[in-house]
Length: 92
Image (cartoon, rainbow, N blue to C red; front, side, top):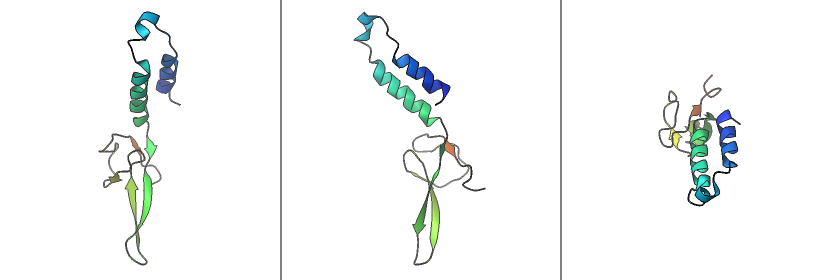
């Protein structure tokens, strides 16, 4: 777990003034921030083997978060959802 996610975990259990606590939805903000931070952690690109004829296949690359097909291998982020991509070992 990254240091940012650990900090968010500590923030989650912080108990502010009880009078203000009812009007502030800290859980909603926590989930939004956590999702944004996870999207910035590189995730391994998924590859799928697609059958194109009886004895021929092609390998396609997909985003690990939104499952959108990636047509370029020189991008660092998914153009659909913004997930940071890890291309290591895919084309070495």
